[in-house]
Image 1 (tube, each protein chain N blue to C red):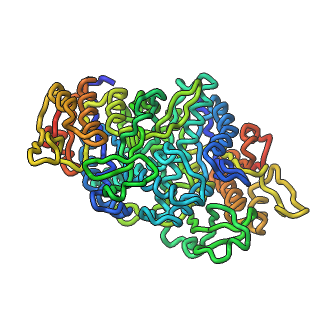
Image 2 (cartoon, chains in turn green, brown):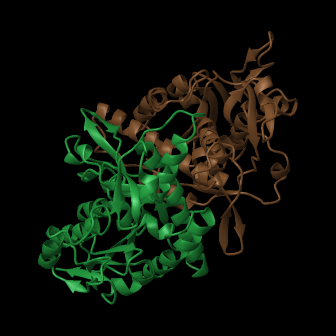
Image 3 (cartoon, chains in turn yellow, blue):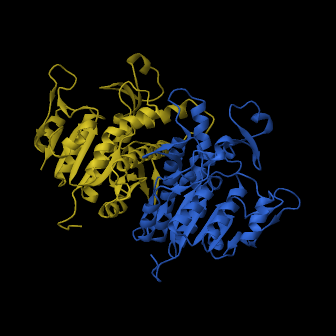
Length: 312
Length: 312
């Protein structure tokens, strides 16, 4: 565990929106093409770091919700099962893209890597269940958003369906993930923030929710011991006065500054807000450096040359 | 690897139809309830054996196909992505059911277990691509099956959609799976026969197909070294003259007998046929015992007390 020779552990959290870009319908070719940029960098970084990859699933789980709602030919599945389905879909896409990149580098035979299903325990009394805030699925205009059968909120990208987003309490597979990274496996896990479950006596039960993938990643980082945490998204980093003429990009900031900006509502809920919060939690729990950056700047972010950087 | 103290390795292949029984719509509660019977037995067997669990996905992938066809709100995904989605769904359901059973036994903290996404290489020139034979999705009456937009065949359970089912050549994650079972992880993998891919130079590409999960399981068993192979299904075992008044259940049979019955067409393609073929391949490749049995007789099958048994 604490061998002086061990590599540092890097956790990269890939946004679901980094796979389906603004304006794209989200065909499978688009998603594979978009993945190449971050995964090529991660493949190179795997030479120097132990790697964990987590990922979002907002657009993908939204598409599954849409399909299920407009079709009565098969029984509806609860949201946690749809999250599990997106872990299958996106986990495979990331793993096979990584495989191709490692092949191009000629090192696929030297590197073990797996994509794991992961579920995450939440509190059934979490206030999020009575106040849905996590955007999923397609972006609507204000006119389109009227009369939809589910809760909708305005987000920086437009109007979107929102679902409950409770806090992650613990990653059920943490022992397995820790063991695998100790053995230098690249581990893809916690997709879509993990499949949300609650404890019911001596068993787990799924719940209708989506856990924020950045907060789940920060919890995982704390539980398995991660040194560097990169949150890769479709923005260059966090900004003050986002979307206004006064918008100002944030470079290196302290945890205290980040907390102040966050408490003043500078970062939108369900979007940059949880990313900044996840970065704060990671550094506060002992992590070395957290960076929020664009998907094409992951390598620069790791060395502190890009993005919004929080350090101890 | 060949320590005299190592436990034998048991691979249990669970049929997709063992999760959604004949006459059930396939609600999530039904699927969880049906899983308890096989998983309770597997949890007990994990005390004495290293365990690999594989699973089918026929009804589940069929439901995703149906939904996608009847809804234009999201881009259609190719079949291999739907297979990946069912690996997410069913892998989670098996893993969380196993978790609950191990908790009931009070040993969940002593046992590591993971559910892995798996993809399987097939040959782009496999004749199966021009002759779809694998049933997926719901069962239709003959009248309902007329006029459907995809190929349909009569199966013992009724009329069903069929898709290409090429031979598995190699399991891409075999090194990882072998390493994990050596470390006494229970590994859930190769769901739905694995996500089908072909090699294209230095990369993999998904293909529109479903690999038979029993043949994929036999290939995995050969590649990672499995001692016992149990194929758990909704029948007590293989039978001669199936579905006729002369139906005769088969107990212990030799590989040679099994090959003869198979070549005489005693076992339906896309159903019992590939199960018998998988059992033959497993034993011929050096496996100790293969058993085709009902989901409630897995423990008895392991000790040779139930099912249709092939031994070396």
